[in-house]
Image (cartoon, rainbow, N blue to C red; front, side, top):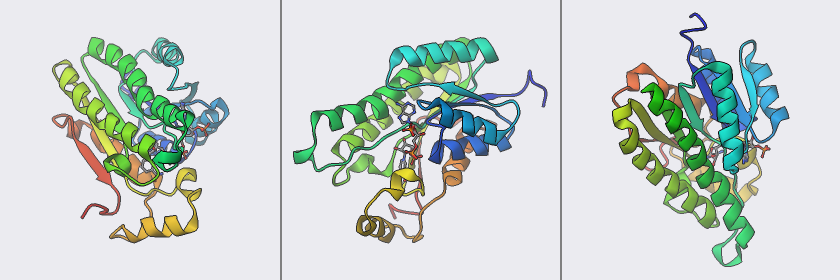
Length: 243
Ligand code: NAP
């Protein structure tokens, strides 16, 4: 593949966990990766793990100015961004009656507004190019989960945003899809108390956690030419948690 033909994929929250897994899967498929993270050192490590030709980018998804700046820089440097994966996300769990304004707001800022800011920047670029792929990482928790009022509200919002953007961008040749991971082995889930961890596992027919590469494979499908007539869809990657 020549440099001119090579597609570029920008992944947010790429410094570790699922984001790094997505970067690894897409890099193996031949994409040039822009590993974006609020933590530039972590993003730099991801880019180094991927090898030659991949780049790190400092990008705080909850700061719209940072997003617009990073996007302009990326386009100026690489000419085009073909795939954008909205993966960055945080959780600040608490029962709703104990949840502070700060816990509510920061999760909404990162997990929902962040997806909007990045998607808006991507939409401007991709509309002009009349092609592109947006893949949003929501969560199985979008349907509601005890202790996750903030996170569930944000992740349900990501689905509404996905359906709206899919409609708005369809005529411009841009597809927009979402993935709902179930229980994936990352730092986010390793921090869960042992009894709750086990209770989550018990709900999964396959009886085990997923790997970041399982999510990466689903992203690679939505990004591929094989998925060119698929938009506004939600794919669960969770070992059958809803059956
Ligand atoms: P993780 O291990 O905590 O990694 C998240 C990454 O996002 C970290 O590198 C983090 O950087 C970065 N990040 C945090 N805030 C950011 C911001 N404002 N701007 C840019 N980057 C930021 O989480 P994960 O488990 O890989 O989860 C990735 C995504 O999958 C999230 O959207 C999560 O909600 C979703 N998800 C995960 C699971 C699961 O089972 N793990 C299930 C369903 C959905 P720092 O290290 O500096 O904070």
